[in-house]
Length: 383
Image (cartoon, rainbow, N blue to C red; front, top):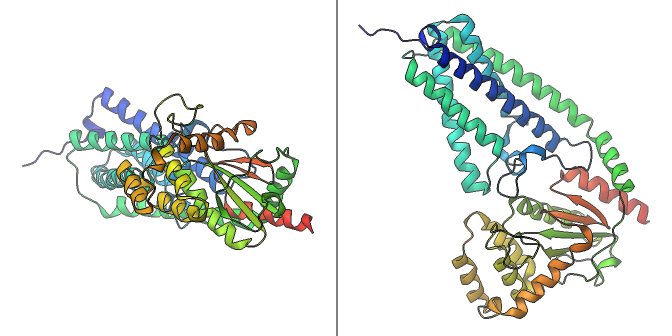
């Protein structure tokens, strides 16, 4: 006869204290991530929202938040972390074997999902969300405690139904709330436009970049909308904004110039970087420089498309295909890139992406609807 072992009924004080601490931390981290999701997806201003979760291009929460895996039908998946933490606390009050067994299976599924999201972040996104990673670790610890100190493994209908109903109610509440927020988007857009107008106009770089993603006129300043992008080929957020740039260029075709200015977070060519970071970003800039302005849009897209798997060999093969193998190693090429990097100095660029829209500086990736609202306002006032 198998003796039932329960973490709730038979666990030591230390195990109970540890489990409570883990559950509380899961709730806290998940609340932070939920708030961050709303700040990124539904910002009310032009200020950056990364805060505690931004440690650079690799360790940041924005990339994960802007990915398709961050939500289900618009509802942030972080709410499940809040619920799981609460379910663990409920177990202390009920001390029920059926609930404990069902919770074990919930924790198993949760941890498996964490492993998949961790791999997705590394492989598909090329970055890690620090707070998400903390949650993954906490989930692993919670699962381990149940695995080691409990042999209740069976799913029971009543606890499962209870979990499902509570989850559905919370999910539904968030879904309706998000739809309500979306209905207020136009008001937020008008607020953003007002903030944009109030920001100082810093002008444009002293020297125009020869590299463009969209071109409505030969002279950069002749287009009604003028966008300067300071970007890094290994920056995940820069990849997102490069994808946005194509949609923006299509929407405002004939009315917009978008110039690309290299700002590699790479000490090999950027004097503002004092430690190894994006060690292929300068080489990517050399390649784009050597291929030339006529083919820039294509090499720009190709490098970003292969960002997750970018290697020195890939860049060398691309250079060989384009016949610029020698060019990417020349000092003149490095000097050209460094000259473009220096164009960022008057604008105090310290992170990527940073963009100038008609001289107004905006950092990070903004929702397209807000960018469209700003550009529509620029066109309206240009008439």
